[in-house]
Amino acid sequence: MMRAVVIALWTCIGAGLSACGFQPLYAERGGDASAAMASVDVLDVPRPDPLGRLVVRALTYNMAPGVAASPKYELAISLKDRRVPLGIQIDSSVTRYNYTVQGAFTLRDRMTNAIVYSGRTDSVASYNVVTSQFSTRAAEQDAVEKAAQQIGLDIERQLAIFFTRSQQVSTENTTPEEPKDLIEAFEALEPPEDAAILETDPWSP
Image 1 (cartoon, one colour):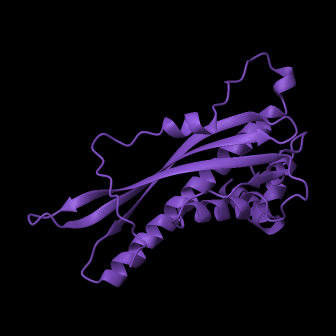
Image 2: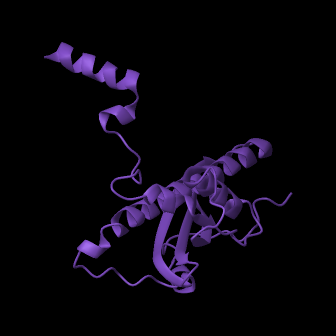
Protein backbone atom coordinates (compact mmCIF):
# COMPACT_ATOMS: atom_id res chain seq x y z
CA MET A 1 0.00 0.00 0.00
CA MET A 2 2.79 2.41 1.00
CA ARG A 3 4.66 1.55 -2.21
CA ALA A 4 1.57 2.45 -4.26
CA VAL A 5 1.30 5.80 -2.49
CA VAL A 6 4.96 6.58 -3.13
CA ILE A 7 4.64 5.64 -6.81
CA ALA A 8 1.54 7.83 -7.14
CA LEU A 9 3.35 10.73 -5.48
CA TRP A 10 6.33 10.52 -7.82
CA THR A 11 3.94 10.25 -10.76
CA CYS A 12 2.36 13.53 -9.69
CA ILE A 13 5.75 15.20 -9.38
CA GLY A 14 6.86 13.93 -12.75
CA ALA A 15 3.68 15.00 -14.49
CA GLY A 16 3.44 18.34 -12.69
CA LEU A 17 1.23 19.20 -9.73
CA SER A 18 -1.61 20.35 -11.99
CA ALA A 19 -2.00 16.78 -13.29
CA CYS A 20 -2.93 15.68 -9.76
CA GLY A 21 -5.55 18.32 -9.24
CA PHE A 22 -3.42 21.05 -7.64
CA GLN A 23 -4.47 24.44 -9.01
CA PRO A 24 -4.08 28.06 -7.97
CA LEU A 25 -7.05 29.38 -6.00
CA TYR A 26 -8.19 31.47 -8.96
CA ALA A 27 -7.47 28.89 -11.67
CA GLU A 28 -10.27 28.31 -14.15
CA ARG A 29 -13.15 26.29 -12.73
CA GLY A 30 -16.08 26.93 -15.01
CA GLY A 31 -15.19 30.62 -15.11
CA ASP A 32 -12.22 32.85 -15.63
CA ALA A 33 -11.14 34.22 -12.27
CA SER A 34 -7.52 34.20 -13.40
CA ALA A 35 -8.37 36.56 -16.26
CA ALA A 36 -10.17 38.83 -13.80
CA MET A 37 -7.08 38.90 -11.58
CA ALA A 38 -4.99 39.85 -14.59
CA SER A 39 -7.38 42.71 -15.43
CA VAL A 40 -6.73 44.57 -12.17
CA ASP A 41 -4.72 47.79 -12.39
CA VAL A 42 -2.84 48.26 -9.09
CA LEU A 43 -2.61 51.99 -8.40
CA ASP A 44 0.49 53.56 -6.92
CA VAL A 45 0.42 54.09 -3.14
CA PRO A 46 1.21 57.75 -2.35
CA ARG A 47 3.92 57.36 0.30
CA PRO A 48 7.38 58.95 0.60
CA ASP A 49 9.00 55.68 1.74
CA PRO A 50 9.50 52.41 -0.20
CA LEU A 51 6.67 50.49 1.52
CA GLY A 52 3.96 51.38 -0.99
CA ARG A 53 6.20 50.66 -3.96
CA LEU A 54 7.15 47.27 -2.52
CA VAL A 55 3.52 46.28 -1.97
CA VAL A 56 2.55 47.34 -5.50
CA ARG A 57 5.50 45.46 -6.95
CA ALA A 58 4.55 42.27 -5.06
CA LEU A 59 0.96 42.50 -6.26
CA THR A 60 1.85 43.28 -9.87
CA TYR A 61 4.30 40.39 -10.02
CA ASN A 62 2.05 37.80 -8.32
CA MET A 63 -1.30 38.69 -9.88
CA ALA A 64 -0.50 39.69 -13.42
CA PRO A 65 2.98 39.24 -14.90
CA GLY A 66 1.42 40.42 -18.17
CA VAL A 67 -0.98 43.21 -17.26
CA ALA A 68 -4.13 43.41 -19.41
CA ALA A 69 -4.12 46.11 -22.08
CA SER A 70 -7.47 47.47 -20.84
CA PRO A 71 -7.83 46.70 -17.12
CA LYS A 72 -11.42 46.26 -15.97
CA TYR A 73 -10.73 47.02 -12.32
CA GLU A 74 -8.49 49.33 -10.33
CA LEU A 75 -7.11 48.53 -6.91
CA ALA A 76 -6.44 51.37 -4.45
CA ILE A 77 -4.42 50.71 -1.29
CA SER A 78 -3.74 52.73 1.86
CA LEU A 79 -1.10 51.71 4.40
CA LYS A 80 -0.19 52.51 7.99
CA ASP A 81 3.05 51.28 9.54
CA ARG A 82 4.70 51.50 12.95
CA ARG A 83 7.74 50.19 14.80
CA VAL A 84 6.98 48.69 18.20
CA PRO A 85 9.97 48.29 20.58
CA LEU A 86 10.24 44.82 22.12
CA GLY A 87 13.62 44.40 23.79
CA ILE A 88 14.21 47.40 26.09
CA GLN A 89 17.35 47.49 28.24
CA ILE A 90 17.86 49.10 31.65
CA ASP A 91 19.36 52.16 29.94
CA SER A 92 16.17 52.44 27.81
CA SER A 93 17.95 51.35 24.65
CA VAL A 94 15.96 49.12 22.30
CA THR A 95 17.42 45.86 20.97
CA ARG A 96 14.50 44.56 18.93
CA TYR A 97 11.50 45.95 17.04
CA ASN A 98 8.30 44.62 15.57
CA TYR A 99 7.56 46.34 12.26
CA THR A 100 3.79 46.21 11.74
CA VAL A 101 1.80 47.21 8.68
CA GLN A 102 -1.96 47.65 8.36
CA GLY A 103 -3.57 48.03 4.97
CA ALA A 104 -6.99 48.90 3.59
CA PHE A 105 -7.90 48.42 -0.06
CA THR A 106 -10.81 48.84 -2.45
CA LEU A 107 -11.49 47.25 -5.81
CA ARG A 108 -13.40 49.50 -8.22
CA ASP A 109 -15.13 48.55 -11.46
CA ARG A 110 -13.88 51.07 -14.03
CA MET A 111 -16.96 50.79 -16.21
CA THR A 112 -19.48 51.57 -13.45
CA ASN A 113 -17.09 53.37 -11.08
CA ALA A 114 -18.61 51.27 -8.29
CA ILE A 115 -16.60 49.72 -5.47
CA VAL A 116 -17.19 45.99 -5.81
CA TYR A 117 -14.96 44.78 -2.98
CA SER A 118 -13.01 46.18 -0.03
CA GLY A 119 -10.86 44.58 2.61
CA ARG A 120 -8.23 44.96 5.30
CA THR A 121 -4.95 43.22 5.95
CA ASP A 122 -1.97 43.36 8.30
CA SER A 123 1.50 41.90 8.71
CA VAL A 124 4.33 41.85 11.26
CA ALA A 125 8.07 41.41 10.75
CA SER A 126 10.77 41.71 13.42
CA TYR A 127 14.36 42.90 13.34
CA ASN A 128 17.21 43.30 15.83
CA VAL A 129 19.16 46.44 16.70
CA VAL A 130 22.87 45.70 16.84
CA THR A 131 26.01 47.77 17.37
CA SER A 132 26.57 48.13 13.65
CA GLN A 133 24.33 50.85 12.24
CA PHE A 134 24.70 49.42 8.75
CA SER A 135 23.60 45.94 9.88
CA THR A 136 20.64 47.39 11.78
CA ARG A 137 19.50 49.37 8.75
CA ALA A 138 19.85 46.31 6.52
CA ALA A 139 17.80 44.22 8.96
CA GLU A 140 15.14 46.94 9.12
CA GLN A 141 14.87 47.18 5.35
CA ASP A 142 14.60 43.39 5.16
CA ALA A 143 11.70 43.52 7.65
CA VAL A 144 9.96 46.17 5.55
CA GLU A 145 10.32 44.03 2.43
CA LYS A 146 8.97 40.94 4.22
CA ALA A 147 5.99 42.85 5.59
CA ALA A 148 5.23 44.32 2.16
CA GLN A 149 5.38 40.86 0.60
CA GLN A 150 2.97 39.51 3.22
CA ILE A 151 0.55 42.39 2.60
CA GLY A 152 0.70 41.80 -1.15
CA LEU A 153 0.10 38.06 -0.81
CA ASP A 154 -2.87 38.55 1.53
CA ILE A 155 -4.52 41.11 -0.75
CA GLU A 156 -3.98 38.75 -3.68
CA ARG A 157 -5.57 35.90 -1.68
CA GLN A 158 -8.62 37.98 -0.76
CA LEU A 159 -9.14 39.11 -4.34
CA ALA A 160 -8.75 35.54 -5.61
CA ILE A 161 -11.49 34.40 -3.24
CA PHE A 162 -13.71 37.31 -4.28
CA PHE A 163 -13.35 36.65 -8.01
CA THR A 164 -13.81 32.89 -7.57
CA ARG A 165 -17.00 33.35 -5.53
CA SER A 166 -18.37 36.12 -7.73
CA GLN A 167 -18.68 33.63 -10.60
CA GLN A 168 -21.41 31.87 -8.62
CA VAL A 169 -23.17 34.96 -7.26
CA SER A 170 -26.08 34.58 -9.69
CA THR A 171 -26.94 31.16 -8.26
CA GLU A 172 -26.65 32.18 -4.60
CA ASN A 173 -29.37 33.82 -2.51
CA THR A 174 -27.02 35.52 -0.07
CA THR A 175 -26.50 39.27 -0.12
CA PRO A 176 -22.82 40.27 -0.18
CA GLU A 177 -21.52 42.73 2.39
CA GLU A 178 -21.51 46.32 1.21
CA PRO A 179 -17.91 47.27 0.36
CA LYS A 180 -16.39 50.17 2.24
CA ASP A 181 -14.98 53.32 0.74
CA LEU A 182 -11.17 53.45 0.91
CA ILE A 183 -11.15 56.45 3.27
CA GLU A 184 -13.62 54.75 5.61
CA ALA A 185 -11.61 51.55 5.60
CA PHE A 186 -8.35 53.43 6.14
CA GLU A 187 -9.70 55.41 9.09
CA ALA A 188 -10.81 52.14 10.68
CA LEU A 189 -7.18 51.04 10.96
CA GLU A 190 -6.32 51.61 14.62
CA PRO A 191 -2.91 50.95 16.19
CA PRO A 192 -2.72 48.59 19.19
CA GLU A 193 -3.20 50.38 22.50
CA ASP A 194 0.29 49.41 23.68
CA ALA A 195 2.02 50.27 20.42
CA ALA A 196 4.77 52.84 20.57
CA ILE A 197 4.70 54.60 17.22
CA LEU A 198 7.99 56.04 16.02
CA GLU A 199 7.55 59.16 13.92
CA THR A 200 11.14 59.30 12.67
CA ASP A 201 11.89 58.49 9.06
CA PRO A 202 13.87 55.21 9.04
CA TRP A 203 15.22 55.92 5.56
CA SER A 204 16.79 59.29 6.35
CA PRO A 205 20.59 59.32 6.73
